[in-house]
Amino acid sequence: MILHGTMKVNEQGHLEIGGCDTVQLATDFGTPLIVYDVRLIRQRARSFIDTFKKAGVKAQVAYASKAFSSIAMLQLANEEGLSLDVVSGGELYTAIKANYPVEKIHFHGNNKSIEEMEMALDYNVGCFVVDNFYELNILHDLATQKRKKVNILLRVTPGIEAHTHDYILTGQEDSKFGFDLTSGQADQALKLANSLSNYNVLGLHCHIGSQIFETTGFKLAIQKIFTDIKKWKTQLSYEPSVVNVGGGFGIRYTESDKPLQPEEYVNAIIHEVKTHVNENNLTMPEIWIEPGRSLVGDAGTTIYRIGSSKEIPGIRKYVAVDGGMSDNIRPALYQAKYEAIIANKAKQSKEELVSIAGKACETGDMLIWDLPIAKTEPGDLLAVFCTGAYGYSMASNYNRLPRPAVVFVENGKAKLVIRRETYEDLIKLDLPIYEVVNQD
Image: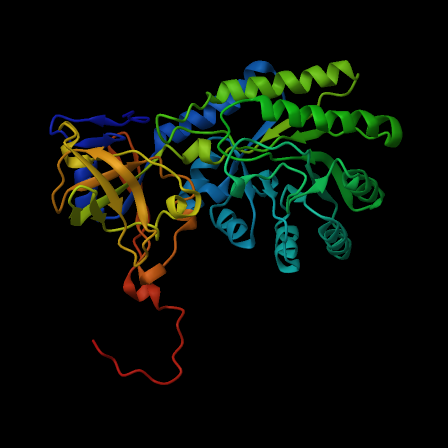
C-alpha cells in the first residue's frame, strides 16, 4: 500500500492528509467526503511547467478541467500558472465565475452547440479546438457576424492507439473526434481553415488516449503529425505555431500501474518534436499539453462510512459504504480498480478479505473486489485512494442520493469547496403537475 502526496499515519493510527486527520474531517464535514491534497496538485503542476522552462521550450500546460471542475479547483489551477481546457458551456461558465483569464482558456468538444460557440466568442476565449467540418464552417460564420478573429487548433486523429481501455481511446482512425490524417480529411480542413478570413490557424491538436504509462504512443503520434507538417510546408506554405499533443498521462491506482514522472513524459515529447523540427528544417512550435487526471487523480481521496456487511460462507464478505457508483461510476463503467484502507485503523494489520459494495440499488455498484483490510466494524471509515479524477465530475443523483462534499486540505487546514447536496437540492428543479400538500 502506497500513501500518496502528504498522506501519513499519525500517532492515533489515523490516516492524515495535508496535515488533517481524516477522522476529524469526517466528523466535521460528514461522509462521503472527497479530500484533495492541495500540495500534491501544486507539485504536479509545477513539475509539468518547470520541465518545459528548464528545456527552454515555449509551452502551455492546460488543466483538462473535465477531470474535476469547480470554482476552487480552477482558482488553484490559475494560481499555479496553468491554462485551461473546457469542453462545454457549463465548464466555461465555471471558469468565468472563477475569474479565469479568458485568453488562457481552450474550448474543446466534438459537438459544440451554436449557443456554446456564441458564449465562448462573447467571452473571447483564447482558442477553439475545432473538431469537424460542421464546426469549422459554423464557428467562422458566427465569428464573422461578431466581427472577431478567432484562434483555432484543428484536432486531428493520427491513427495511434494507446494501450488503454477501449472506452477512452481517442487517437485511432475510427474515432468520433477530429479530422483523420490518413484519409486526407486533415488536409481538407487545413486548406479550408486557411481560406477563411476570420480564422488564425495556430496549429494542430491530437489526443491518443488516457491512463498511458509509456511515451511510445506520444512519439508515434508526433511522428505522424510531422510527416503531414512537412508536406504542408511544401504544398501549402503552412507551418503550425502550436502543436498540442493532448494529455492522458497515467497515475498509479494499484500496484499493477507503473506511471512515469511528469518530467519523463514532457522530456520525451520535447525531444521528439525537436527531432522532427531539426530533420525537416521547420520552425520550432509552441508545445501544448493537457494533463487532467495526472494533476488531480491521486490527490483525491474519498472517505466513506462503513455500514452493513454480509458474509457468504466460503465465498465472500461484502462490506457496504454510504456512497458508491453515485459518487464514483468508474468501477462500474471502466472496471476501474482502487486501493483503500480503514482510515481510523490505519496501523492495524489486514485481517480480512472483503469486497466493498456501494449503497445504490444496483448489483453492479461495487467499488473494490477482494480488498485485504483491517477488521471492519459499522462506523469505521474507509479511505479509497486516487479518486480525484472523474469521480465528482461524473457523479449523479441515482437513487436520489445527494452528491458528496469536497474539501481542500493544505498545511493542516481544511477548506470546504463544494458543500454537500441536501434533499432540498435534489428537488429544486422539480415542477409538480398539481399542488402538493406539504408532508413535513
